[in-house]
Image (cartoon, rainbow, N blue to C red):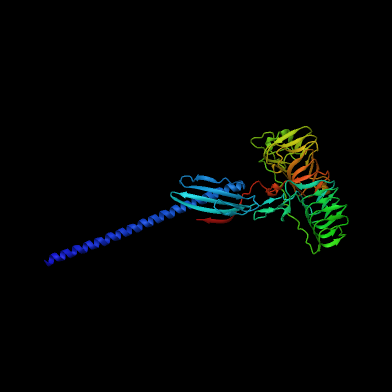
Length: 493
């Protein structure tokens, strides 16, 4: 009997041990399963994050080729892995104020906001990035006319003429940012005249957007309908400033100021309708005008123009040819200069949107260079000369569709001729950027904006500023794209 009891107790003990072992086995199996699930989740999340990172890298490659890119990727697969990514782009490179992305994030001016979502199996991770171009962009056209020279008469209207703006005369914000530098810095009125040197308005010239000059401003018998900021302001011949004046010295022997005049020194200060405040007034700083790069590339749209208009340059007839051009006029000579564009009397050249590179551009008689559609960007390293009977024609009527950038340094004082001499028989809509060379204008009328070392309007040609040009950004011919990107922030979640 005792033996049977011992056998039963042993059986119970064995069963209890087996139960403990089974529970332990289940626990170990559960832990192993949890560990495997954790490892699988970790691997899945890592793969999804890697896919999202690949999307960011792909998007950066697109931006480096074109900083206006904003298409993004709906769904893109990584080869051999089955992983995918989708990228959304909020591009505010050319913006003047912040814009709100789809997720509510505010994107500052000059920046691009990328959001990449990577998928790996059932896992997904998100990488968000702020970046900007490694090459700064500029807003060079915040003035109707701007003279970069610090010499006298950086801007001169010698025979009347009107400078105003299309539409209202409200202020245009300069909107500087980490990657976009306005030229100039302060906000100015639409249609303003500006200069690093002196400004002359004579012959009844009218500046409806005001005048801002680091040098002296002389108004002889004309009208400034807006503010004047200058080193010395001289009013004579019945000139009128219908606005406020701020100058180091105010010399007013024969003019009228309807607003407030603030100056350190008043000379002949009669004719001020508003108050006169004497205080120390600092002069405007010289404003940056980056030069145009004189390097002209073979990648251009010159091939769309008949070779009969592109004679070899005098410096060299040897050229580097491209596959689609066999006549030796593909855009760049071995000496590094672009071909001349010569349009004779009665000849016509019509171009479509593209980038064109030339050395000299000469249009004589009734010859015409017509912009059929835009934007057409024209880079020139030499002189531009047109005649009043022909010249440039922008059939779109939109100034930003015809952009002229010149690296020529010719000035009337040094060479006896300007870098650009425009005579317009018809109204011309364009923007001209020639910060190191002189520009002269005569003819019918001009719509757009002009930056020159020194600008002279000798024919009373009216200039109408297009306010939309305040938003026009560019690299001023230095390159068409930047191959580097500056990452401002990176967030993965």
